[in-house]
Image 1 (tube, one colour):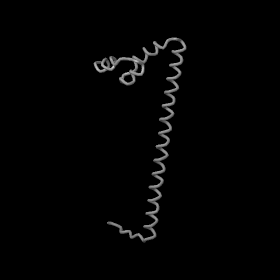
Image 2: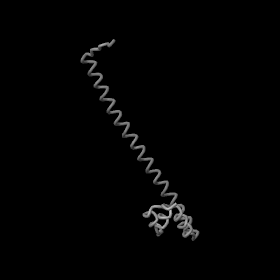
Image 3: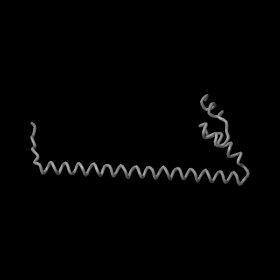
Image 4: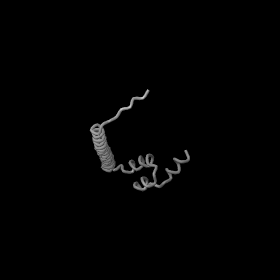
Length: 98
């Protein structure tokens, strides 16, 4: 058995108004979530820069920069990253063959 519900104009208007508010709130929520994600990505990037800066200074002050380059040689895979430290791309081909 089906129940037929007839809505008057006032009720229809309320429904439309609430749907409109819902859409606005959903958009605001999405905007806030995106801002939070962007802020977290920026913080993560800043952390990486600071950690990298620490290790570069540490190894440079101890005159052990070559040791840092050796560590990076083991870690880095992408050619563009390896080029930053003047490393060849032999590591890239070695990783592919493993």
